[in-house]
Image (cartoon, rainbow, N blue to C red; front, side):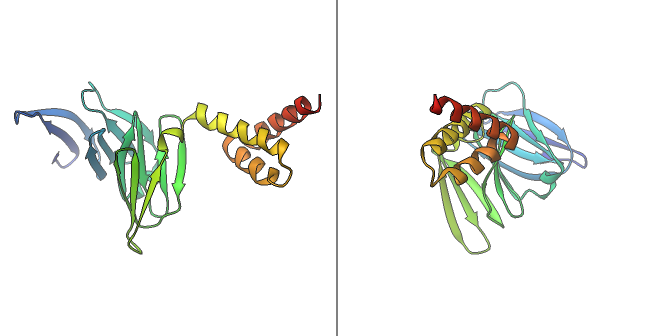
Length: 186
């Protein structure tokens, strides 16, 4: 990575040592990392991802909150984890999912496991299963399953409904919950 006064140039090297440009992005570098899934970088208030072999860099998200990013790592196809001041979030092209409330965190991803170092206390957390989080279709299916389970378990229904409402929104969770109730009473 070579930095200029206004434009960052990201450059990779082939196995024979020859350099090739990945991209040039205008703005201040906030955080960047490289792993076998590619380059993840926050420049200015935008998150960019580049996968090895891809012809272009993808801007995944632009948000003012990214100016406080502490770390970033690629975790899959157009998905990255960002460590902010007090939270760690999984960011995809269509969703942002909070992984944990972990202040002063640094993150790395290897073999399907997210490792988060909480610098404030030295703890290292590991998270598996990110591939089933943060995608609208799987999140929706999960929430609908929670509502279905809530119909069959009166003792847990409040927590399951609240989690489904967090994912779907209160109105949609309420509508789906009442439809499931109608189906089970027939």
